[in-house]
Length: 296
Image (cartoon, rainbow, N blue to C red; front, side, top):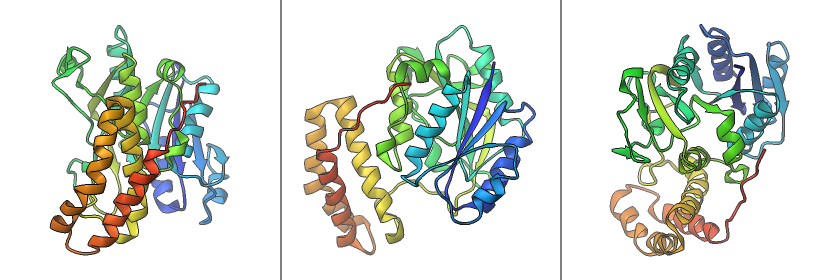
């Protein structure tokens, strides 16, 4: 079984070095490492040229486009399993081995992906990367595979996720038009929505080395990150439309226009009007946003 690691990077060379070192130090080696370089200007390209990796340099159109390119390239190169992560992900030495072990132990089932446990620098769970878990997943209790150290999930992030070629073939590729945020949620929920099982593997651990342990919270966000929320809100509304239907979508649109502003006024301590405008801008963009799934 061939496995390929995918890393998407942009101008974070010091973190990328730690990430690649972590991949190269695995107890179970990746058969290939593909790095999607979104036209970094910090010496990333020059450093990658000295490393045992395949580099694809493309115009920076966001992380989502990078993951689209990486997963597509890995599939076309014949990978059976595609190990995906961002450049600020540092895997522990046995992270891949634990994911692959779980895929082997559960091979009588139709699994679309396995996701690692992401921790922050202090060892606590990273709140950005908590998977979506319900009591039942497609009628199967979430704890069915406890003996393998696996918990069934609905969706997960791209911070160390092992995706099967069968899931990519059947479900297509991530939506590159998402640019940033929620492309992983849309893609992984599409996989489980197609009937694949998916699991969180607690013994596969990675460090998600962000500056703070945070989630995408419009009420706590700093102004410098506001642009990300434009994409995040738009993309989540698209997911709502596809998963819950047009009526629920329009209900959420009205909620964003009429009610969320009052929540922002009540909960935010500063830049209140600015973030109200961010929500309105994102919601307006969502109304005409309708990207199509691209198949391999």
